[in-house]
Image 1 (cartoon, rainbow, N blue to C red):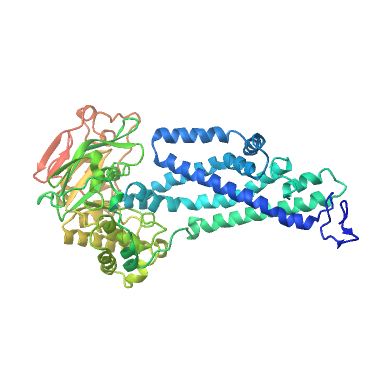
Image 2: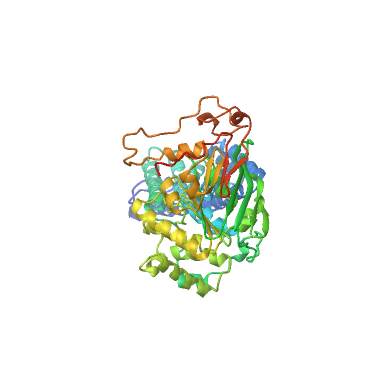
Length: 594
């Protein structure tokens, strides 16, 4: 072997990439030098990713003080440049592979932690997670079955992308002499050695080109991985589902995942299924979003709720199932379910077995990582409704009843493989899976085209009548309410302004807001073809509605009392109540446009 840098020797002949200052073959050292770099990068990503995953989950699912402590700790660490922190850590310990791994892991874990926390919080607010909570899934079962699998895509992509970063940091530490130690070859130390022999250019150029090419290849692979794991491509990470007849039969029992109080299934009155009494919801600033709202739900009947966006319709329904968004709290009121009286803070006990729910967007309501059969049977698994084999049979029978021609194919399909109407039919099946006595439908047909709206509504109505369940239907379409609702609640500004028989309210509304709302519905009829379409005027600036009626600033019937106090209930008929100081005169017809 030659004694210095060169490309040939008398003993071994030509060296393809030359030799270093000690006569060692550059090609063999280049090949062998990739091993410690991958070990450092791979173990650093594994350790830092594991720490970040644990910290991110703890911060997103733990107490507020724990989240604050962990996130402020990561903020402090992120204020120090990553490479500077890694270099300080490496200089603190004995130089070598272990110290490099430790230094890089300590310097990079906050990136994983913050990403996991953000993704978990985002996924946890998704409709399909709320639907799983309605089904009765709680605690670790909810986190690890629905939230974590859907939050891992970005985390895994970041792990692959950070391989190149960790290779770069590890090689830089070796270049400074605190990473991989001689005689073990490493591309960083090879470049560091070559800088002292610049006349032998290949000692710097060859490992430098190899290093740059390798990092660029890792980054390209990371970008490809991120693209493949993107939700937009339909490729997701998750365990493959089995046909429901087998999967449900082999699934473990999940009834222990919930600590909600169990209600007596026999405690259901004949007259009223659920009575919501003076329920109020406020935000963290103390402002009421819903104030003293009451509902009486009767078996086999449909309660329609109408009102403008922001009137509190959806918030009221979410409060009934304890699904309020962060920052909102149900502070007052109680629920009477049959003979059982439940506080608003115990409303989660009603989920799944007693109350079902259908959300607006069928795609976001279904877990993208789970097959349809598994999701349809999950509620019955949680509440032990039938044996595993009976649950599997029920899944296929329900898919047949929902109008699917090939139940086996649908059960083995993922949500993105179905159309919007098919997904919403599945959501209807999930809502009734626990055999509930109350089903809340929050604008279930808004995302569907007209040809599918009637079919979904018919499914809801048929299931409601067949099971003697009470259906709460929230909708902006007054014509849908006219054709489906037996009873009607009109809300505005978080208040109930009119309530009673849908037929009476739609034909002769007494609240000025109801009258204005019905007259604002566009419909071309011979009587209205030449009339200017009505609309509700905006409220004047500076209108104070905190003490009085929330509609006072837009109401043509407003009197002085409307500004100072919310009106008491006035009984129009036995099935018609209005909250108004100056209601529309009796005998004045309304609802011309519906």
